[in-house]
Amino acid sequence: MSIVVYENNLGHVTAYAYAKSKGYQGTEEEFAIELARCGGGALVAEGFAVGEQDGVPVTSESPYYHNNSKYYAEQAGQSATDAETAKGLAEDAKDLAQGYAQDAYNDAERAEQAATTAGYMEMQIDENGHLIYTRTDQVGVDFDINNNGHLIMESVA
Image (cartoon, rainbow, N blue to C red; front, top):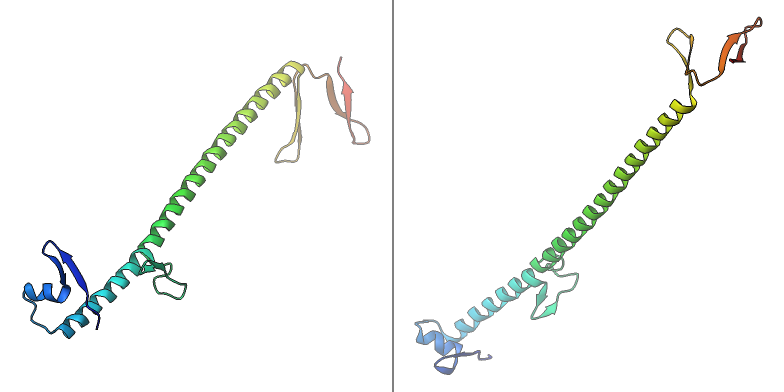
């Protein structure tokens, strides 16, 4: 049996002797068994805390592998980093979308100005199947239907 050494302000004594001085009633062998149980508990605690046992990283077969506080803290940190990255990308996309919306608005304004200056015409077919033609005075064309029933464009002077 190995003797566990405990050091306190009284100097160097065995853990068993120290326990006896504090009122422990069991034998040295019973004490060694209790120490072994505590040591095993410490290894379990270390496994679940940091994914190591006796300072050595556990293998993938261990129940503590990717199942410990350190691992989950690292995963949470990575998730936070990923969330920050996604937030940045979303802000960039929002800025681009706002820029494109402003560009579209500006293009529509320029198109309206050009149509007002140069004139425009529009043709639509209504719900009854009639051709509806609208034009500004700047557009020098008009339409008519000839004897064959064809739509013809005529210049308006």
